[in-house]
Length: 229
Image (cartoon, rainbow, N blue to C red; front, side, top):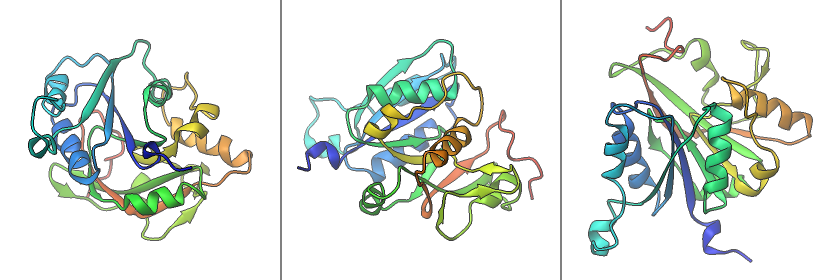
């Protein structure tokens, strides 16, 4: 029997000094999803990141009309941070079965949540299209960005990286499946690719859906904007 929890979404966002984009990111979540639960996994930010996030927390004293601009947000800070460990922790703390992982500098541009939920019945995960933006300018899809094509792909394989390709900048999962098939707690990068390879070996399928789309904005510590143009 389908429950109310089957229809709603828990959004997990990892943060570390993300004051430049985090407000835009959360605003895009509130604008595109109906009353989502947002789970912030913070790596002890030292800027205004958490203060900005708190501006979006729903106040039960506000009337329902004004509360549409806010939502429920949980904030956790983790020690011994790794990408996989933070996501595993956020999944355990989530309330809903539909899990969305979203980068702290990715703004949602297109999403069909009904279609995504239907596809999650056929695939163990879905990841979406990314439009790379450098200082406000859309840049050519070369290098890592060349994976984000305009057609659906099942179990995408990267010739560039010589392994299965998945990307957690924007992705959907089922909580029950992820509790049994978590990310690696210890690796410090590309937890999504290692997870995808493990899942394919188990005979599972995941989907790349170009109609799930975000703008992925440049950050000073990012390494995937090399060769911009």
